[in-house]
Every structure is written in structure tokens, then in C-alpha cells.
Length: 90
Image 1 (cartoon, rainbow, N blue to C red):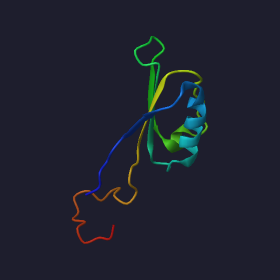
Image 2: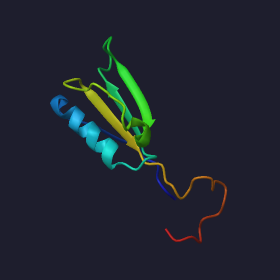
Image 3: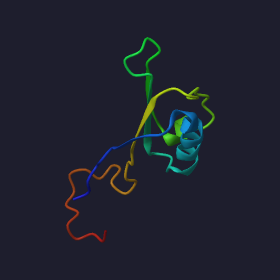
């Protein structure tokens, strides 16, 4: 069975924008990326999109406390739910 696990991580706030740019550039297009900034503050922002949707999207993360989350969506299982996959190569 394939595990669907969300990876949660943070970075030093002054490096947030570089980390975000690297995620968007290097993640597969279907990888879900969530950016949660300024949690518990009046300026709180939580946004989730596939990596492909983040491309070209401007986001201000400079020196804002931010939590990053990502979840890879497997391509090979799209549209194949309910089938027995026990004999397939992994």
C-alpha cells in the first residue's frame, strides 16, 4: 500500500521566499503545496494549491513566520481506485 503523508516544515523567515521558489520549481505539478503564514495573527494567510498553480503566483513571505506543507499526489493511481493492484510492479 502507498502511504499518503503530508510533510510539514518551517524555514528561517528570511529564507522563506527562496524556499518557496525552490518548492514551486522542483515539485511535480500535482504536488499539493500549502503555505500558512502569520498563524494566529490578524494577517494570517493559509493557501493550498498544486505546484503548477503556484507558478507565476506572487506571494509575500519575507520575514513572515511560515509553515510549509506538501503532499505528493501519485500519478499512476489517478482514476484507478477500486482495482486490485497486488500483481502490478511498484
